[in-house]
Length: 308
Ligand code: SAM
Image 1 (cartoon, rainbow, N blue to C red):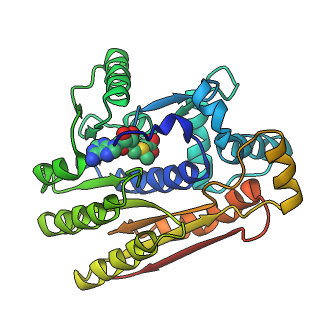
Image 2 (spheres, helix red, strand yellow):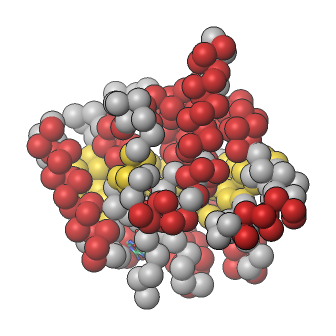
Image 3 (cartoon, helix red, strand yellow):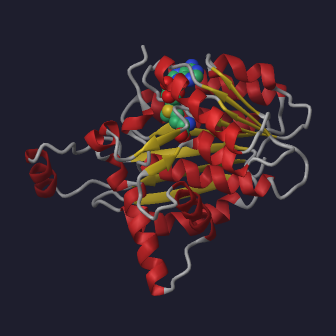
C-alpha cells in the first residue's frame, strides 16, 4: 500500500505551485492576531535532501525548485523584483539553504513550522512508517531549536484524524490535504474529508492539491470540490500549472541517456474559503513561475475564483 515516498518528488513543479499557494494563504491568515490551527493531513517526511539518491534518481527538482532557484538568482542579479508570493517562497527556500547552495527542500511541515507564531498550532499526520519516523526526527529538531509545544505529529490516517480537530477552539484554521493519490480511493477520501471538514467548520480554509492526469477520478475531483463549495455557498479558488512537454526529439534524447521523461506535467490546487488576496497573488506569481519552468508544448497556468 505504501510505495509512495515524497523524497522522489520533493521540489518538483507540483511542490512549487502547492507551496507558493500554501505560504500566500498562511501569510494572509496571519495578518490577524488570532491563533490559527494549521493541519497537514498528509505531511510526508517534512524536509528533504535534494542531493539524496531518491531526489537524484527522479531528477524532478530540475523542472521545479532548481529552475526557480536559477531564475530567481538571475532576476536578483538583474535587479528585477520577484512577484511577492514568489519572493516569499524563495526566501523560505534560501533560509533552508543557508550556505547558498540548493541542497535542501522544505516540505509543507517545514514551511509551516518556520512561520508558526506562539499563538498558532501545527498538527501533522503521516502514516508511512519510514516517513513518519523521519518527520518525528524533524519535529524533534524544530522543537530543540525553538521549544514549541504547539507542533504535534500523529502517525496515523490524516483523512480520519482531521475531523477530531474541527472546529478548532480558535475558530481559525488552514488545512492542507495533500495525499499521494497512489490509491484510486484517495480521490473519494479527499472529497469526503473536505465535505466533512466544511460540515464541522464552515469557515476553515481547505487547500487541496491534485494531479492533472488522464484519469476520470482526477478530472472529477476539482469539479466535485467546486460543486461542494457552491452548495455550501463558500468562496473557492482553483489554480493549475502545466509545465508542458518537451519536443519529442529532445524527450527521446533524454530517454536514451536514461533520464526519466514525461511524468506529471500538470497539477492544481483547489481552495475552499481562500483569502481574498490569494487569486491576485497567484495571477501575478504563476506567469513568472511558468516562465522559469516551461518545458514546451501545452505549458499554461490558470486561476479561477468565485465568491460564495
Ligand atoms: N504535504 C507534503 C509536502 O507538501 O511536503 C507531501 C505529502 S506526500 C504528497 C503524501 C504523504 O501522505 C506521503 O508521505 C504518504 O506516506 C502519506 N500518506 C498516505 N496516505 C496517508 C493517510 N491516509 N494519512 C496520512 N498520511 C498518508
